[in-house]
Amino acid sequence: MAAPLVTSAVVGVGVAMSGGGPDQVDLSRYATGDVGAAAADAAASEPSTRTLGVSRDSDRQEVTALIDPKVTDRLWSTAALDLRATPDQDAHVLGEVKALTRLRMTGQSSAGFDQVIVRDDGTRTIAWVTAAYLAQKKPTDPSQLPLSDAPCPDGSVEHGLTAGAVRLYRAVCNAFPQVTQYGGWDAHGEHSSGKALDIMTSDVALGNSIAAFLQAHASELDLYDIIWRQHIWTPVRASEGWRSMPSRGSETANHYDHVHSSVN
Image (cartoon, rainbow, N blue to C red):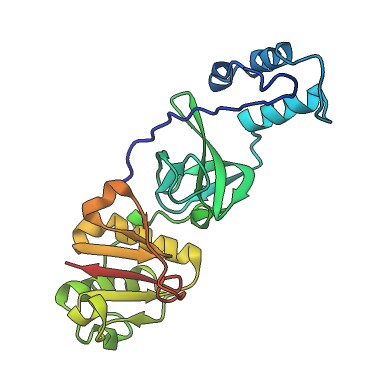
């Protein structure tokens, strides 16, 4: 499902000094990772009179930290994740990492995103990923969980469901026996068609695993959509990954306490 990683990020850092306007620093050296030469350029262009109350060493350390952040931890991605240029849902997407990828963390967090360092074919990208889809321990690969059509303990959930939705329910209940509550047919939205299922959990790691399991078996289960934590994924737009949804006003309406899925 995940697209190949695209790593075309370039980091630009501007250093402004007093005395005749901002200095012009050769940023191409930052982009290529030549931090020492870039710092020398900055030092050479520095005016003789400084009004900032910081040392030249402090400036260099600050710039180096932006260009070459240290790895503070390593976490696993529990789903395929977009690599974003800034910590914002609408930020430019630089590429994607697959589920079950061990990511290098910089320790920087903002607005629900964590900063990561990704290397691919010798190219390094510093980007932001959604923090909710990261875990300390490597999750079980959801694609390896078998599809089962065995009846579930609570047969009442199947009432009013189409044959495809029953198969969806049985696949999930057998793969994730720890889930004990489901929402099946009712008179609103997709549920009124008998094609939708709500898998009740507020556990982020468990919900991520269920969503990834459904993604891995989307074709076999003939899925129409998956909704989880105010994001939607559909097979017909799989190349776009998880897409954000506008708020509907509550945790339940925004799917923070259940994974929603429906069949065609």
